[in-house]
Image (cartoon, rainbow, N blue to C red):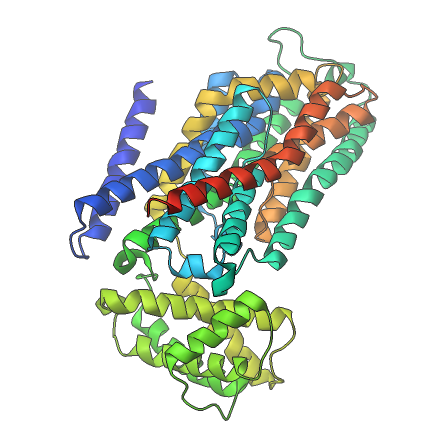
Length: 509
């Protein structure tokens, strides 16, 4: 306990020091802004804490239930592995989640509507997660958060459709939806196959296929595999699910302290100079004869294109002009830290418009024909844009890792009992736990590599169900029905909840 408390206090001190260092280079915040920042960060980290109840608890369910590790050791180890997973996260999942939001809300996240959006999403997600945790239902934090995002997007469209507001990006929704739909099916099928292979390879070790007796641990080899897979699932969960909270925290920081967090200040002068050259080359590559178009006009054209997905003759010239101007505007400053506050938010928004428009044109195959050299220039330019925009400070990763780990240690027990005893008609065996964890670890790690958000809860629970079917143990249909009900109703429930909260918060801002 003393070591544990020392780690928590040290982490909090580190976060405070790093946040103070970031804010030391910006004008002093008002008391209102400080209160708003503290509240928003507390709620965002609260979401990750509750996420630990659900998703990370699944990672330790099999090792605790099969007696491979004592519960205190398992949850501490899972918390540490989550920490490592969060620290090496690429940020692709974080910004993939943010891309679900309406473009005008992302670009105006510092406005009252922007904060209403963030608070509505987080509070709705926390309320649903806590409700399902109290009932011991392994609901998905990924589903919950995505439902909350959809609710805000739909309500924003309903309220402002007359003024040209966009709803949610349905292409991105379908992409994320496929990952959430197919990952449990993959977990179910592959876990069943892996379990049958394990049964064939270890057919003489009958004790592997019997439920745990008392506190008796599994055989050494199986115990080692169970600990290894628990490690892998915890690490993969941190690198995937941890990013969802990171993305929302970055939205909060960009909205409240744009001077400190709008752009990646760690990029050197060489990157800035290279960006200037690539901007000019890209502008020529996509529209050689482009004329200087006022930035205000170019923004309007690109915003309308992103919202409506309707290609017009003005889109490519507008993108070429904005791209060239971006390079010149950034190169005007030798260091990103020298960009004044009134300019930095505008530069970030233009970069976001540029990268989103390129993605949309590329996906719709509406980019003009280019030479191989030009294609390389455009690709390099887009990578430079991502380097400016898609970054996450180390202290944010540390804060999210701490919240995830603490959530796991507080709320693991309800979910462990559900996974171990209630999915099948018979209790989980050592072999089933090993097979389910191995498949869950591989599936989540693969999804993280592709930048796709998946649910640790659904992947692991479906993998356990797959092993039960393969073992002919039968499924406990009451529990399965409860889990499926949560899977089906999470999206509509959180859509309504977050949409209602967004409307309510807008009345005050």
